[in-house]
Length: 231
Image (tube, rainbow, N blue to C red):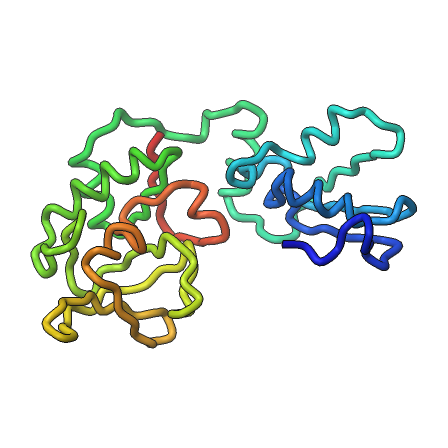
């Protein structure tokens, strides 16, 4: 819920919004509703990023308006990195796929890549779940969960925000083992800082999953040394 609205507007003259691609249309509309008419809005972001979940691209739709009060300025110099990935990314943007190597989907080869330390990212959750299910069948340490089998020391991805345990959607944690509280088994997980917390076997189906394969959307903001993209 927003404290500001048309009856209680924000006291600003210039508003800067970073990562505009992550803002939903609903939140943007509520924000506009809370701004005085004289406010100048400056948005920054990457128009090639994935849209916010459940929303269209605000930057794209602002462009469709073709209103004289809306202008766009594009930054063409990359000061962040001169790695080859930046070159390839720009080639793909322009429809040039010549630097990429495509192979037919082969689960056994994907499994080999995972064992070689590659992170698999996919353009769909169904594909990621299929790969995670296949790889997890070979795990034998923890086989009593709702969906997947796990190995001790295995990394998993948190699937929902959990302020109580201070872990959030997209965080990577590690499986430590299983313990019991009042004869009820619970899975022990460990954060990157070494703190441990627990989830029940039922929660294992909804609160975390193997991170062998994750969606491109989930991978945003992360860095990996070796990547396989499955489409």
